[in-house]
Amino acid sequence: MPGLGLRVTQEEEAFPGGPRVLVTGATGLLGRAVCREFHISGWSVVGTGYRRARPHLLRCDLTDEDAIRGLLHEHQPDVIVHCAAERRPDVVDRHTEAAVNLNVHATSTLAKEAAVSGALFIYISTDYVFDGRNPPYGEDDSPNPLNLYGRSKLEGERETLRHCPGAVVLRVPVLFGEVESLTESVVTNLWLKVEAAEGCTLDHCRQRFPTDARDVAAVCRKLAERAKEDPSIRGIFHFSGKEQMTNYEMALAIAHAFNLPSNHLIPLTEQSPGSALRPVNAQLNCTRLELLNLSVEPRPFSSAITDCLWPFTPDKRWRQTVFH
Image (cartoon, rainbow, N blue to C red; front, top):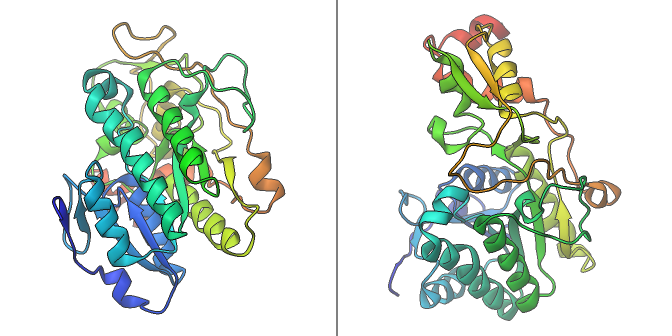
């Protein structure tokens, strides 16, 4: 098939008799965490990537419908976790057609094929489907995205539920985690501002709820396991970290966690001109997950971000000297 290179993953070899999960975007921040979470829980994991494809993952162009059909026919997953997306609002504005092809059309194809095969489809969406004017937002509140990114993800939700009524949509806010480069997350990228020698301005207007990708991965696994037993586990769910912080406040917390100065960090209380409009506060109400006992207690931001950033400190022994 065009765009499809089939290779069995190490994870699949490890648990050949376990339930099977296919993870799209497995080279990304969330996709890696999802693969790891399912793997350590005894699942047979197949991960796909495209531009960042690497050994032990499948290279698949998700905008190629034949490639998707071939992938699912070959591996016959019980669950599909669709993490692949263009998540950068400013990139979506500049490269709209490519972003819509991935965020909407590829999602539509995956949802159709999941419905045909009987696989549970978990679609990762975003708090940016809301305008941020009346938080917190429940699953039944009316979306009103402010930018093209939010609109593309909302359309992906609609395509998911239209073609695969038994699917799960999981909305999450800004993510961070164990990154391969600081720029993988706007949260970890703040380390560059904290380390800077000169003054740096940081947004102190938009309220964010930074969420560890490892926690999101655990929620995906719990949803998958419960949905196998209970067909009422379907539709839209919210999961979020609980600490409300602007980018400026996150940077202050990072500086404090590493005992670094912060007086060069300057709060900016107006949105930067020329960038895609973002909601001021799109806080998610996560009660549905909690009532079903499908949530996890989010890791505290200060300890979680320390876990993620210590490998980028000048002295790699920092973690040992602080924690031991």
